[in-house]
Image (cartoon, rainbow over all chains, first blue to last red; front, side, top):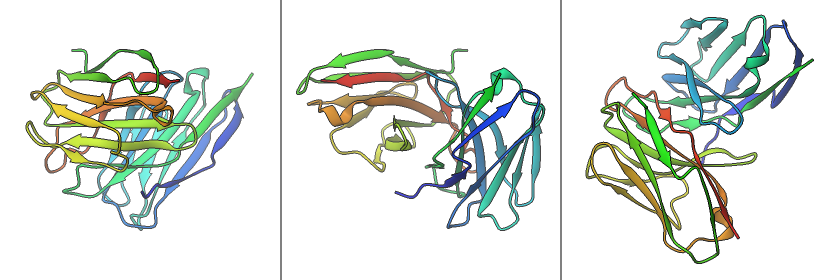
Length: 111
Length: 114
């Protein structure tokens, strides 16, 4: 099945740094979702995007729906230890109940 | 409001044994889903149910059966477990219908088949 490509696959940053990650697809989506998964837990929805070019924030997190509809971006500002985890993107189209998930970006904070 | 709950949290089975994973949601959602998550593979859809009384295959349905018992509950059954089914299983739900694609996940069931 199709999976979305996320990059980078992993990131090692210091506390306080800003983080950028992206998700790309070979096909167009009209809905993009971003999830975070803590170790041993289920994914938690962070941000949902429904319109091309849309920029949405949730606290220190900001996500953008790419103009081409084939990509999406997630930025985290001033990272803190609780930001550690795996970030997944997911896409779908109107009328499709199923999500296509990305392969994940693992974020680690170096002390 | 517990969201999506799953039982059990952990399970160890021997090859050939059967078991049922339980999932319930209290958000009055129409759609429910079962995923498996393996290292490096991300989340893969096993089965989903768009409404009470309907179920459909996802990407990896072989070796599994599901039952949408009512609007709240969606169970996943392994009739004859195999080591390849060792994985973490997640249940999710969404409101469903136009404009409601946000899925909410349970805490997962960690299954080991020896």
